[in-house]
Length: 185
Ligand SMILES: [Fe+2]
Ligand SMILES: [Fe+2]
Image (cartoon, rainbow, N blue to C red):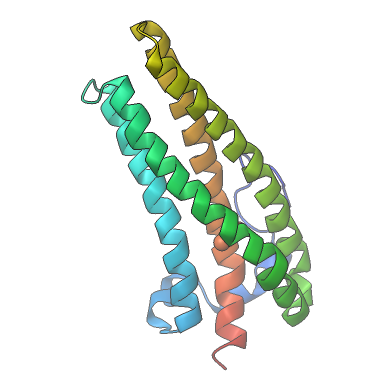
């Protein structure tokens, strides 16, 4: 059970007993409002990340100048970060404690997810720091400095998004089957 979001591939067998009963392919047909809500929130985060990566691709492809990239990607990062902070708070303080009580055999998984939040907050801080550097560089007349700061920001944002996707996928694999078992039966 790895804490490393760059290395983790999936949950170990002992945390997969509900997922085996409710595999991902069956989720959309479940019509559970709580599942739909959970997936919808995560879809929004993935959407923000996809938009950040599109902006980065436009920067790399020369379709977006670094100062405009700074504005567009900065707005998107702030939207993502604002949503994530509130979401992680409610998961750590309300949902995960309730889920540990409902399904004690999954407690180790929720502990791992809570630790993911702390690690992701480090990646969020790094991306926001890189954004501040980019905005400062965008005020300067030196194009090479702006380009370098834009690349550094894009790297920090893509590291955050890569790790966030791993977290969202694993969280869904743990939470959605639990909701299907406990909320709908
Ligand atoms: Fe989470
Ligand atoms: Fe979540």
